[in-house]
Image 1 (cartoon, rainbow, N blue to C red):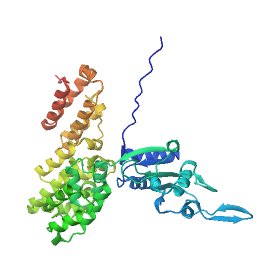
Image 2 (cartoon, helix red, strand yellow):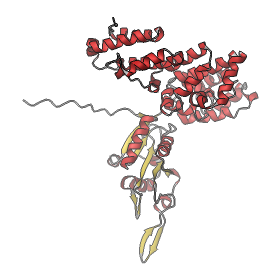
Image 3 (cartoon, one colour):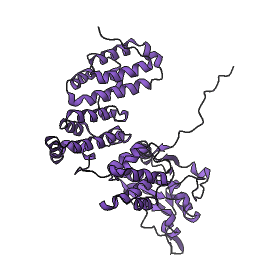
Image 4 (cartoon, helix red, strand yellow):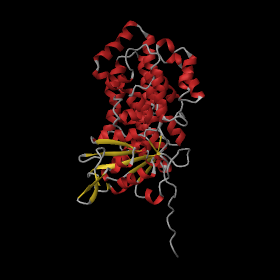
Length: 438
């Protein structure tokens, strides 16, 4: 009797979000010196992320917009010497060193440019020119059949490339926007609306931000001007949302609140300013500061900012130490309950559910419990642990494990009530009964 063949799913994974995941794949492709085709709608950040990867790797980055080139710009002009024809290498092609050569608009270029570009991509050479060993060649293309005027690429030719379907990612774009001086109105909209990038690409939102930042103070209340200008980029529904939020645009704070999360422990000027609000009873300033920071800390971009060290525990804890109790607790809850920020603490869920009593993890938990300025660390541990338990494929085994249940019971006994209740709610939902220490 023939054994049944294992079932292998036919479907490929969905598009990779333009963010850390895509960065990792592109870094790997560069190390392997494999040509890459990044396919996705216009304006989602395909080119920017390649530039970022090159900067992260410390290598050069050269961009060729194929839609603007003529054949000699890429192939070189013919030179006849001793009765033989060769081609002068264009200055735009790298001669040495290491880097990424990025070919833009590959499937929107004319065939007479597309063919040599594909030769360069797939064979790393063009006539007598050869791409230096330290270089990799990437290309960006728009999807076929989605309203773009493109020249389709042959399927057999595509097989020679590492083909990556990419999509806009709200969390990654918000993280970039937070540190790239994007207008607060645009950031606020993106934080409040999960589908903000569905019909408007990130680049267009950035253009809208440029318009808003160019407004004079007396023009902010000119609704007709705002609608006329923004309608050049945004659909009417988004224009109205931007206009409706005008009252939240202006800030009374003399600094960018995002700096508080990355530099507060290293910026005495920021610390003096924030302390002066509490000393002078400027509750409006404190409320604005807290509201803006809570919105950021609760959002999906927090995890990306943590990964890029734009949010650090040293800065956050120096800040909350200078805030009144109610403001401090709001910030601690916003950060502590965000599952994307759990990488900030060095207690992993696996440590908690195995041999927790007497462990290094327990010693850290007890230390943080004794310090109210570090209670957000406890919240992050609980948030990470809850997510870990909810992801368990063999939940029935977890429910039966006395080791896991004992560890959870021990942890619950040591947590402050607020965070213990969060964990209890998760355990009830999953049907896990902790064993309390006697």
